[in-house]
Amino acid sequence: MKKIFIRTFNIILLLFCIACTGQKEVEEKIKQVESNLSGWVHTGENDTWTLADRMKQLNIKGVSIAVINNYKIEWAKGYGFADESEKRPVSEKTLFQAASISKSLNSLGILKLVQENKIDLNTDINKYLVTWKLTYDPKFGNSPVTIRELLSHTAGLTVHGFPGYERGKNLPALPLILAGKAPANTEAIRLFTEPGKQVIYSGGGTIISQMIIMDVTHQPYAEYMQKNVLDPLGMTSSSYQQPPSDKLKELLATGYQADGKEVKGKYHIYPEQAAAGLWTNPTDLCKYVIETELAFLGKSGKVISPELTKVRLTTVLEDAALGAFVNTRVAGSARYFNHNGGNAGFSCTAYGSLDEGKGAVIMTNSDNPSLLEEVLNSIATVYKWKDFYFPENKKVISISGQLLEKYTGKYDLGGDTARIKKDSNGLVINVIGTDWKIYFTSDSDFFFREYKGGCRFRTGPGGRAKAIVINGQALKKIGEI
Image 1 (tube, rainbow, N blue to C red):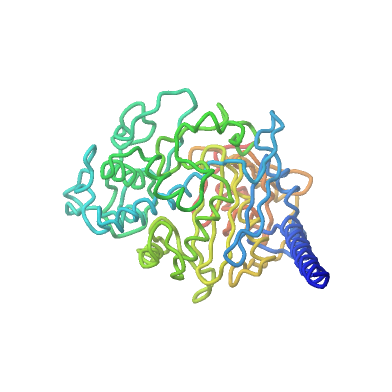
Image 2 (cartoon, rainbow, N blue to C red):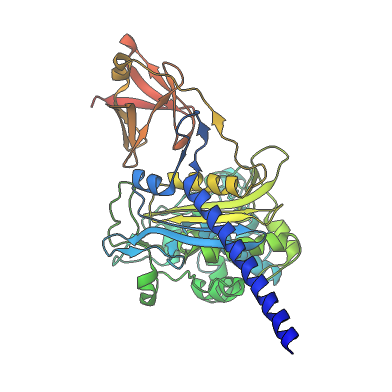
């Protein structure tokens, strides 16, 4: 008996030591992720930052991160404030607006109905719509729109996204939003071009799929999604209910603008639930990512079958699949599925691998998305994601103060104004409420660390700038500072 006791004790002690060692390894990885944020470009100097420093620089109040490794959530952690004025910290349970990531879960709700033979991916959507119907256009050949096109943004429909509604304001019913009638704050959903020909991102198309779910099931959208998608995935902290339940008040993050100011009313309400209405956290969203990875391998089917999961993750045009985008960072390399999101006061991203059991979800209560890619790059580096992060190398040069003066001014930013000014370190451009440093690679070519792409100044008489060109788009100078 004594020998059995000693043997059992030794086994327990061994398991405890293994668990402690594993936890220490995870904690070390967390520290590495927090200390190695990096952008799309490297200059050989100051190419990495800490999470705390970047949150401060970018006016981001709160961040929540969850990381998937070997098809399991390895860790989840919150940083900063869910509400700064209340001094309420972000925890792994804090709920954020998933914004357009809502579309990914919505696609599962639609495909559940396909699996049950209640709807068909390739049939005219007007067969299923009762409360409202889409008007077809003779100039586009009266071509019908299908559910496959709705979910892949290839239906040729209007309305990219939705601004939401201030808390306390009258909320339009879904048919009024579709028709663009008051109190809706967006235009009517209509055909913009011939269906099936190109990818035109349309939140408008997604809320048509919301209407289909309601018309086919005769259930409130949030109720259907809870029972048929969220609960089966184990996403029990998540909800499409709009407005959110008062019971969740202490868990809801407050949204902040890019300049750090609180969104009026703390957050907006989104009756466009399928397109932007999900409240969730990274831990819950990781459950969706993991299920997608396992279902793709044929090892699970909590909502839809492995066969239908493969259909869902097959691109229709370009990188657009059904409720997700599937891409490779290098031709012929590892494949990743993802969706980003941005609501008033919130930004987020969710990534998963189709070749390895890795992934991550990052959510912030800021509508400045700059931090997301930097954190993602750090996670990908620490966890050795295959063929994911390949920063560009650029050589930065110094420009004379006299030349810098010729580039300062106000530039038209499509209805907003970008201001370029001098500071002690050179030139900065103020966009979305924050200053981005300008790095020169020639007398006229430059880049920002926060925005991927080529930029240059277009000059006129006397060498003074008359426009800045960003990724081929010219932003005209409209005044001096």
